Length: 395
Image 1 (tube, rainbow, N blue to C red):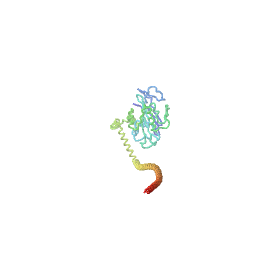
Image 2 (tube, helix red, strand yellow; image 1 turned 120 degrees about the vertical axis):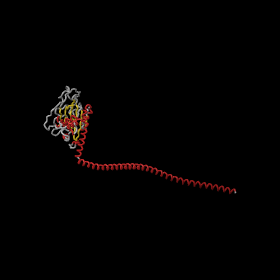
Image 3 (cartoon, helix red, strand yellow; image 1 turned 90 degrees about the horizontal axis):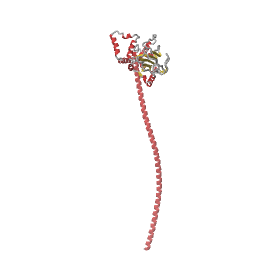
Image 4 (tube, rainbow, N blue to C red; image 1 turned 120 degrees about the horizontal axis):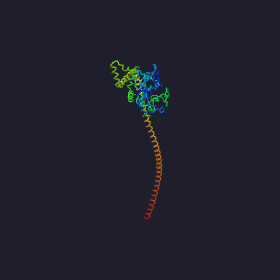
């Protein structure tokens, strides 16, 4: 079983009762822890003297009306009972969204101490407006829950809510957070990196209500007990008001709520509430739907035109590539043809020269042959005349 040891509230609360960086410390005034577990102190922390003590068993907070008592309870219950339906003082007020300014990243961190071992666990909630703008739309209100085991590397005092945190213990009443405030994403990255560097911290981050409730049960913090506390403090009355039933049916309802898992009914209520919000914004949603449909139609045409232009560009680029390739081939072919034409012209010139030379040789050969024929005929005639003269003489 755990007891509340400390509460830290940072950059959250209504305008009239705002918590800049406040720590409510209830430690070290109760009974000694019977079976203390070994605890490693922080780097600059003093060594513990004697066994650890339990937190204060009870406390009284004196504030005037409007001083922030109900705000404190609402913020504490928002960590242990997530969801607007579990808000202290009413389900439909949306009061938690009124506790954040546009630039805020609000934190509510609770440190719980085990009654037997003295071990501590820190559970907290971070919330901010998406886009840094306050809106009536609950979907723009971002919430997340986290838990870790405090130790060297991370504790309630050294929560990375700002970009710098003092290493040494802070002076009473002074904030240890220095520098610009972190956004929710920056805070999540910081504690996640701390969890990777120091596995003993057991850092856990959750953004879904049901899973966070299950995780609280795994830690030993039963959300059902806080639901009873919420009902007892719904109208800032006493605990007996919870059991002040007028009829048997009221007691039966109380008993059924105590033994029945309400997650299904809570989901149905959230679903009905979501439908109610949508019906209330029907005209706005219809106009948004028509605008979206018209925009989608025009954008579809633009996309089709862009696709057609892309296809035309691709076809043109392909034709240009083919044309350039053909031009390069034709240029290479023209060079080869010019070389071949030059070679053929040289061959034609050589052939014409050979023909001319052959005709001259043929003419010389004809003259030689005619001269030889003439001489042969002359010699034959001379021989015949000589033979004829000889025959005449003989005759």
